[in-house]
Amino acid sequence: MSFEEFKKEWEGQEQGQVFHWSSQQSDDDKHQLLNDLNKINIKEVNNIYKKIINDKINEKVVLSYQGFDNVKSLDDLTAEDTNRWQDIGYDLIAEGKVGILLLAGGQATRLGTTFPKGFYDVGLPSKKSLFRLQAERVVQLQKLVQQQRSTVYKETRPIQWYIMTSEATHHETIKYFKDYDYFGLRESSFFFFAQSMIPCLTPEGKVINETSSKISLSPNGNGGLFQALRDSGALNDMKTKGITHITQYCVDNILIKMADPVFVGYMYDQGADCAAKVVSKVDPEEPVGVMALQNGKPFVLEYSEIDKESKYLKHHDTGKLVYNYAHICINAFTYEFLQRIADKHLDDLKYHVAFKKIPYADTHTGQRTVPTQNNGWKLEKFIFDVFPFCNKMVCLEIDRKREFSPLKNSAGMAIPADSPETCLRDLCQLHRVFIESAGGKVDITESQLIEISPLVSYFGENLESIVKDKIFTLPYEISTFN
Image (cartoon, rainbow, N blue to C red; front, side):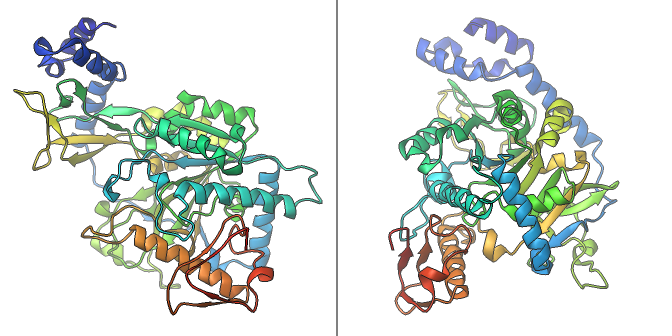
């Protein structure tokens, strides 16, 4: 449509305010605004706003919920169960039935940069980025599967990797992987796709201009994944390649265990179509969403929804909190489940509202203005809102120290947790444990920095021949060249 046609349509939808400056705009400014307008179905945006308001009017506080108990803890598993599930996972990976789904739309703005968060280097001796660490773990996992299942399969198939970006990170992310030759993986193993954007709104439902020639747009949340999988063709690609199980994670977790065979095998063995890794709460007041049941269906009970008494409620036999298992956005889905969500439940995934400081266009000048207080809504869908639609869900409790250390904040922020420093500390501590478990020692007199290349070991295996009876003076990197 032309600029004037958009103007007429938007005015008919009572959103004509975005054209407030049109009489003074140059052709270039109008063209820039037109680019944003082409991304937006304004009738759909208005319907979303009406639904949010209607839901708020009819909102019911979550009063009826129960604890989610379909959880296995890694610490409590027998060696027999662990090995059996690992072997199932190895078989599924070898047969090309396991895919990886990465949420990588975020920019490292809170870390003081504007590049994709996957580019970030937390300060390891190797200076490897998050993307590189994750890719090299996949390389090593494929080698491990080939070694472990060589008597069963003449040839194992590569793991397929689906990477969801955002408008801000899409092209840079693709270029990054291409520039590094996909870190030794096949180009055909990758499928990049971008999530949708949605306009920011005033509380009255009006679309916000960031400048006179730009609409304020933001990604539609990690729950936008499911529509993006369908619209991009990623779901069809999974079907074509025979993928049956997809493991999902977020780019900022430096300890992520890529396509964890034990997790995949556990899910498969239990006949579940949806699974999540969880961690025990640090204490009852930790502000995290926890797994729970409502009307017999799994869901994430958000911190703001749980009452004080329930926070402290404990099981009589174990002493554990009833609402103990924090959801950390490490999930797994069957292909059938993802297809069912795309076919039947996209409209059931509601938008959540975050009241934020949204930069806006000055009424007189049209220039970008940063507000001093919250002025608008960012709308986003949450990935865990699909849980109630599964047939069976299982959770695997993991150790935070071994598998979960997200990168979110800069060290200079008021809350220094989840910073480059904590990520670096946690990875080095894990690698120190790997070395000591394999019979080696580390000298920390001068430094705490120790790094094991993923190309040497996927998760601490096969290190004895390298480290046993040796002392490593830190800082030190164990690489393929040692």
